[in-house]
Image (tube, rainbow, N blue to C red):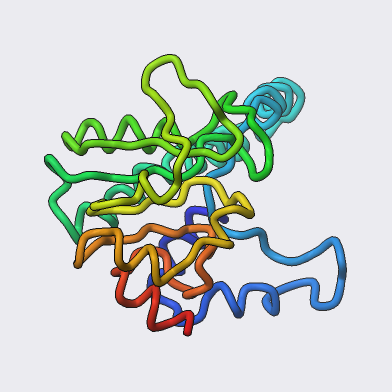
Length: 202
């Protein structure tokens, strides 16, 4: 479902605004989940338990493979907009879900790996995660995005929803590409330019 949301969300105007009307209307525990990066140790572990116990394990394994492919899909969509070699990419969010510091099985690092494979200069930021063995983590969000060619929102932390959008526009490169699969900036777009970010949120 998330793969479809990420792919179709680029083509369906106002997808994020309309998704909650698609199913289980007015049912508090219903509704479609946001397209995004879904990871964590439980997702990984429980998937193997399901495969062991269910007769139709192809469905589970295929779902897992699709989920794991979402980072590559998003990087591909960014790459279609800008050549990533030697470009500064601000990767926002390392935890596997919002408001925690747990990076176990986080798909943010799959995004990082894909960006490095494109020879991008990746800068990491997370308001909760303070240390990562393979690379320093920047503590100042605005320093992280300064002169960025790409801003990639990988985790929907509340701190990112409170960012000064006009300040972002001033700090990043003029034609900066933003990948916001979580719709943190409320544009109803997944990949767009920084000018659209400010225009669509006035």
